[in-house]
Amino acid sequence: MNLRHLHYFRVLAKREHYTQAAEELSIAQPSLSHAISELEKELGTFLFEKQGRNIRLTKYGRFFLDYVNSGLEQLEIGEKKLKQILSPTEGQIDVAFIYTLGANFVPNLLKAFTSKKDYEKFSFNLHQSTTKNILTLLKDQKTDLAFCSYVENEPDIEFIPIVQEELVLVVSNDHALADFDTINLKDTQNYPFIFFSKSSGIRPFIEKMFKKIDIHPNIICEVEEDHAMAGLVSINYGIAIMPKLKALQHYNVKVISIAEPLVQRFIYIASLKNHYLSPATQSFRNFTINYCNDFYLKYSKLI
Image (tube, rainbow, N blue to C red):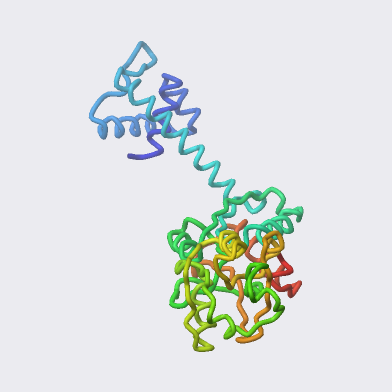
């Protein structure tokens, strides 16, 4: 069904006069008559009937007009909202991020971004989950950018490292290891561990740490979210390796630096390769990369 013909139909239904409707539409009257005739053929009914020099809607035309008005109004609303989303000055940005970034990194980044005059009218649609779920959102185009761990064998996704994340051993203040400020990971092999779930992007990284020193940790519990992990550690349910978060100072835990093995872990900004990004999203992506590069800050300082 021709969208232009529906627009013509709506104007003609309002004017109830071919000449006046044609003038409003800035088209020739024969063109309007032909368009309405084609629409009537497609629908299999007459939409108008003559009334003196004017015309009026048939009962079928009145029935159809309600749906045309509703449909065109929704399209107009959609067009307006789409233009707002794609606006270079007030567009919407869809971002997904892992749980550990929710308390400080993302809020601080958004604050720095929106404090710029050119970006102050931008809005954000935020999602929070594990790396695995976030990358699914990215590939399904339900989000445009992701802050997450690096994942191998993802050829359609571009990963750019933006900040370094320090991993630490966390134990309860009542734990036998709480007297240490620095530790070799080999010294933890006799203690039960709380691990991040397999859907977490940090899980393979931590597993490689243990593989590097040829230790198989005793995993008694798996969680998705860092605060749940810190809570379990605080009651001495087990020990854990996790990012060094400022929030840990609010838990009954001791944060211990890991001397061996020495590792470097980064947080990445991820996006689909060869995928269109709106002007607003592209601006935010560029700002994030430059913001992190300019300050050369470690993750612990950014959050």
